[in-house]
Amino acid sequence: MNPRTDHRPGLRRRDVFGLAAAASVPVLSACSSSSSEAGSTEDLTFWDMPWGGTQYTRTAEDLVNSYPAPSGLAGAQYQGLQWANYYQTFSSAIASDTGPAVSSGGGFQAFQFAQQGAIHYADDLIGTLRENGTYDDFLPGTMDAMQTGSGYAAVPWQIDIRVLTVRRSLLEEAGTEVPTDWASFLEAGRALQRIGVAGYGTATGAGANIGSQGVVSFMINNGGGFFNEQGEPDCVTDRNIESLEFFNQMAAEGIINPRAVAYTTGNLDDDWQNRRVGMGITVPSLASGLGESGDDLQVISPLASPNGDKGTLYYINNLMMYQNTPSEEASEAFLRWYLDNMSTYWTEGVIESIPVRQSIVDTPEYQSDANKVRAANEWQPVGKTLAARGEEVFAELNAVDGGQDLITFAQRAIQGQTDPRANLEAMQAAIESVV
Image (cartoon, rainbow, N blue to C red; front, top):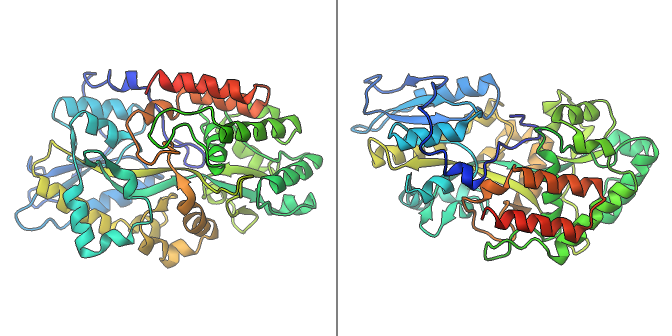
């Protein structure tokens, strides 16, 4: 997984529920114990994904190893997983009662396993966080996104958000200003196109999800989205049509590179590095991911849409507890401790996403990166999940996110040759087939 542009692989619902009885559990990448009885079957297991480079995994393992389990409760073991086939790994383990007690994982994973009755809801833990004041440290909306009709399926711990990044030196060379709304974004795009630079850099080729995430971000920015307030598919709306007309205009005026439809993440990174892109939807850490210092690559403030709305797409990654645990009390004690000590990922600089706790945003280490600060302060408050315009996240979103139908939808949008209504009607039919 490329943290600069991609979120995670997506699965269709038919795949998700067909995997539960799949093959045996693959070998995991790491295993250690913090318990005084190392290797005890009473220890709970914490499965974690690689949310950064190798240093992230070392830091995560050290953190779990330092867990001081309360007297009478189990310790914790750290086990790292890879993204490849991760959902199959979880499904197989849960089906055979060999899964973790607590884990990180895909953004919609907790909601899928909650439907299967495998999740230990976090209501009691969150109740404790309310009582001791910790709850108030979580950024607005992050806890609410974990709530389902049956309770809190998980607890948030980091945010993967899409922001608008510009290369200031190219804007200056083109004689244009940093855009503040869609009209000035078009003007800046035209100016960049005149000096031979893509005004809007994107990619929808093999393995590149940033193209579809960018289109959805503009739809949300305009008050749209694939679903209505009741969580029902509702793609063909005036706001969504207006958003795709905006993409058609950018394509027609040459602001989008025609080759972007086949671009990989590597192609797009190469264009950013070689000053062939002036603006684009990216992750906040684009500059550091490309190895650049300074402030030439700059996250700007959210644009105002023609209707005055602001918004973007984000994924609230979470930590979940399972029914299969040595002790529910031990799972909650460990997760409560983990939430209070996970700041080390940001203070040591081993993770690129936005933290969900204001106290971590306020640390000197996080405040040293202006792009990440702007992402937390200005973009996070207007972020919405793929469920927009609805508020409640649900399991079937995984079948929409990252699937081929969404990629095809985005490819048509950035090519600008498909009638917006027809494109949205096709997406509506695709979503209705899986939701």
